Image 1: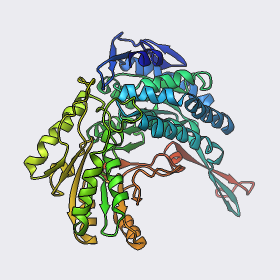
Image 2: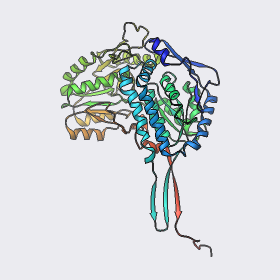
Image 3: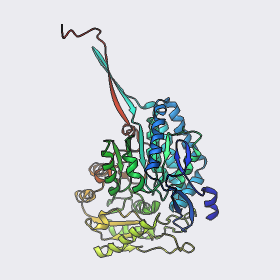
Image 4: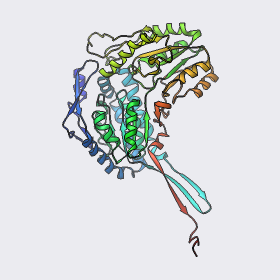
Length: 495
């Protein structure tokens, strides 16, 4: 692993400002470690408000030219980023795995292809971003769509490359410039990608400042030259960002947490549903905001389903995240590991039954790794904390239901509304459930069934705005009305 890390990463990274990699104003750095081994990977800059000001100023200067580029030029840049990722897909996958702890199968099978697909998708949109024309007898009304300016993008630690693409790609497609603040714990793959892209992205169009949120987040969002902020992360941090954004009255898009309902109906394909629940529990170690962490199982098939679920989840292979056979790696940080453990201890005290897992996993050769056994709680009530609060780990809660109205009510009885799943062979029921679930995404008979252009976003406290779709461009542009008078001469009002 040490050899892999040395080949993939630089010893130290600077901020990317104005097309140059520069040191931070404070001179302080942050050590990045591998969560599977505690091995040191690299140092990054610990940014401060002075670094933010330099980055925003650079982005603001670049905006005037970038916003006036031909749509085809923006298309080529975005397509070029996608091609860079595909050309080194395995390298970027290993970077993400070493930095985050996710299995290489997740990094190489979803994260990197998905990231490239986002840049590819938005590369097709600059030419299709249009306003409107309305004709009147005496006038023509034009509505232009214009880029906003400097956009702040703040991305989380769980799926860093993919979440970065969801913000950077539409911002650039619409003609904006970006100041990106990645999570300080998992940003090395992002830094390497934009090193690789310096020959195709004009200086200042994308700027990156690394560091801790409290030191740079407020300075970035409240900067007077920032015109929009896009954030993915927790509700408490979102509330702070919205307060910072209110100082200059700038728009925001927020993709926050989830406690998604995965509804298993009596007529479901139980083998497929059990596989879907296991995948939703262990993919990316459960560190996915849209994971189906509340599994609602119809009473009539509960015993049969739980038997299949238990047998299947025990087959999950846990170990070295760089091993292509591994399906569950370590949690990304000690902080997240400790949080999950606290919920494992809480579940039985609330009255839930531990079906499987529930402990720290001991992996030979990875004694310092942050591994947790895949865990399923049964006999869960919807008002338990383990059913209401986002655990963000390989933990699923199983709840019993008897009739359709009941389960929809239970599914919606959550402060969140990000994702959901329905497993049934009844097409009418599938549509009825999907219409009535208060959530931004509903998958029918296959969880995590992502498709290009699928809007991603939440209801309620899961946030607002949509990513990954054409409508995302409306979050990164504003309209301007231009009225052309067709009647020459004065109106004759004051004669």
